[in-house]
Each structure stands twice: as C-alpha cells, then as structure tokens.
Length: 547
Image (cartoon, rainbow, N blue to C red; front, side, top):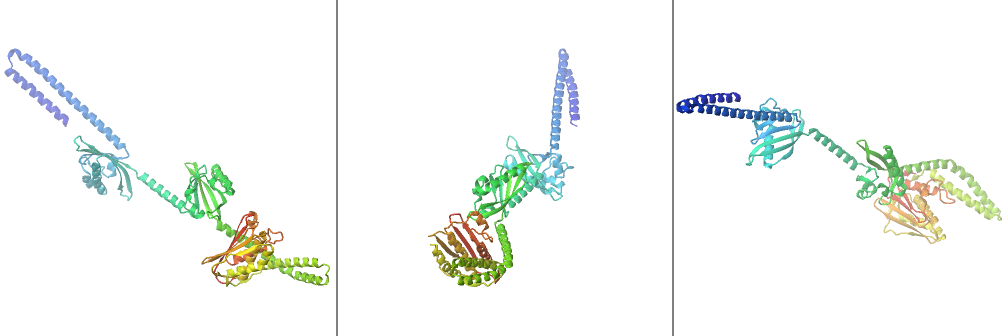
C-alpha cells in the first residue's frame, strides 16, 4: 500500500514538474537561453529523481533490515522455553512469544496494543492473573530498576505453576516510561524437587533428632561430625564437647581398638558392622551399647559413616539375672535331689563320732576335727536346702536399723578376734520397711562377714544407711583386699568362691534374698583398694511372695 502511494506521488510530481517547468520556460525564458534552461531543468529533474529513488531504496533497506531483525527476534523469543513479553510505557503488549500466549490461553487473540486488563476479557480462567500482572508491573515501575519475583499461576487442572520472573523497566531520556521487558522461567519442577528435598531433610532431621538411640555421624578420618540429642540423655555428656573430635580419643582403652577396627572394615568393605562396647556414663556407671555402623554413600562414593548405638545395659543386666536364675534353678534341682540323702547319713555319722568321743579320750583332737568337718558339711547342706526349698515369705514391718544392730551384735565378736571394728553410721530416725527380717539378717550377715574376712587387722568395716520415700539403701564398705575384675563378673555364681574353703553359696543365697525382696545389689571394688556393697530395697511390697 505504501509502495503505491510513493509511486503515485512520484508520477504526479514528475508530471507537474515537466509540464509546469515547460510552461514557465515558454512564457518567461528569453529565446537565447531557452535551450540552456531546458537542459538545466532536465539535469535538475534527474538529480531530484535520483535522490528520491536513493531515499526510497534506503528506507526500503532499513525497513527490510528492521523486519529481518524483528523476524530474528521473534524466532529467538518463540524458541525460548521462558515466558517473554514486551510492553510499552503504558503497559500495552507489543510482542509476546508463543509460550506466553499459550500460557494465558491467548493464542488466537490479537494482543498487540492491549493492556493486561483488556486481554483478561479473552481468557476467563486467567482473567484474575492477567489483572494482577498490571499490579505487579506497577511495582517494577515504582522500584525504578530490575526486580525479580516468584509468581504462582493457577492452572485449569487444579495445579499451580511457579515462575521466576524478571521485570526490566526502560526509560526515555526525559525520565518518562519507555517500555517494560518481562521474562518468566517456569521453576515448578525445581520448586517441587526443593519441596521434596526439604521434606526429606525434615524426615532425616526427625529421624536423627528424635531417635531413641544414639546416632553419630563420622567422616572417613573417624572424626565426629554430628551427634543427636539422645547422646546426652544416654551418656550424660554434652554432645558439643565431642563434635569435631576423633572417636579414637574419646573411647576407653578396652573398647577403642574394637571400634576402630570395625570402622576400618566399614570403609574397606562398605558393609554394615555390628558390635557391642562398654563405655562409662558421666556419673561413672557402666553403659553397654549395641552399635551398628553403616556406610554413607553419596553419588556412589563413600562419604562417611553413621553409627547407631542402642543402650542395652538394662537388657544385659536382665539377661544376667535370668542366667543367674537359671543357675539357681539348676542348683535347686541338684540340692533337692541330694541334700536330704546327704543329711540322713550325716546325722548318723555325727552321732557315732560324738559317741566315740565320749568313750575314747586318747583321740579327742581327731574326733573334734571330724565333728567340725561334719558341721561344715551340715552347714553346706543347709544352704543347699535353702536354695532348693520354696518358702512362703511373709512380709512384716521391721526397722532396718534394728536389723543392722542385730547383725553387728552377732558378728562383733568375730570381728574383734581379727582386731577389726564395725561401725554403723547413726541414722536420724527409724526406717520401717516391709520385709522378711530373718532373711535380711542372713543377707547382711553374709555381706558383713565377707567384709571382715577381706579386711586386715585394725581395718574398719563401715555400714551406712540412707532412705527416701520409696527405697532404703544400705552400704557396707571395707578397706580390704578388694575383688578382681574376673571374680566381679562371676560373683554370685553357685560354687564359685575366692575363699580357700568357700562354696560360693553364701552370695548365691544373698542374691536370691535380694531378688525375693525386689531389690538390687551392686559391688564397687578395685583390687587392694577395698569393696563397697550397695543394697537397695523397696520400703513397701505388694502381698506375700514365694521364694
């Protein structure tokens, strides 16, 4: 259309020039100069016509270049997977790529020159979103520079798409608005991955922080990188004091090599390793941990080690009590089958020896030795019968302090013979507990007697008593020879004793009495540094029990 307009204008001007100049030349030019003026007119026409064609061709080239540039730009933005939109200073759409048109369901709409609010009339579902775009654009103009925002666009299927949108305002030299460039990248998938990753982190954090077991993270050098809060609850130590330190520095010597070997095996074989180790609690009590070490694999590479440790101290103690109970059961069965058979001939032998002793004065020393040994056999049989025979325990109220006084009275003479003192720390008031007094007497006689036998001349056996609302604790401490680690592990086993003539049944009976009273008995000892026996008994019991 423009070409025809330019061509028509050229023809009209040419005709006007030719006929107009010829008329003027014939009317006013002098005859001698008419030819010269005519040629000058023709040359001038050629020059003007050439300039016109040059100007026209230049403009056509510029137009073609502009169209070519616009075509390349259109091809470029349509090939982009991002939403691209150009607006003028008034917010009217100049150009948008196919992705943007499809995004707002405007593919078949003549959008150029229209504002977002006007285009909202062509897209029912995205009408509100298009209107909001005008508000968002205004924020970019007010900011005066490039802004970056995340915008959520609801979809017809009920889902949402999230766009990382960059808005670039353009200004004229006089400060007026020139245009706005909008580029929005669909980051929905990335946001979903980030959400899943965050959920995974939270699940891991919950598993790590709220696990009932100790969870420790180690790097490949054995350095602790993290510990969960359960570490402090189980061990009593502050986790922050251990993070960043090598695990080899923190373990006791008896467990260090075992743990280091298992960690090395995890690194070498990249397979789980299970083991048990003993570590001390902050208060000094032993802890038994059942640990599982697992490799941490990241991108098919070993990145570290995770150690999960469960406190099995109570479980192992329960197993030990069951083991002792099984042994007591075996001893009971053995005792029941042989004790009575031994006691019957034993009574006859004792009577005959006493009769011979009365008739034969020459061998009195031998008879006395025989009687002593028969009494010893009788005492052992009595202990066997105590283990074998179920007894009805009738709990009565008794003063534990009075029981201890009676025990001391019985053993004071024996202690004096060895030049050993027994001291009982005075308690402010009576401690009344429900118990079987005779059995408690036997229990504490066994314990105090062992303390006397382990002590040396001029030593002191100290007995102390502490009570709370629920429990009473009796401590018997001596400064004697102490107990070896080997014997400590087997203390209470039937027929295992450190004494030359001991049967081991005394402590077995003691354990049984404590168990029947629902109490606990603990030993703290080091060789040549003495022993402390701690007996804790409940103050009240529920009814009678069979022992």
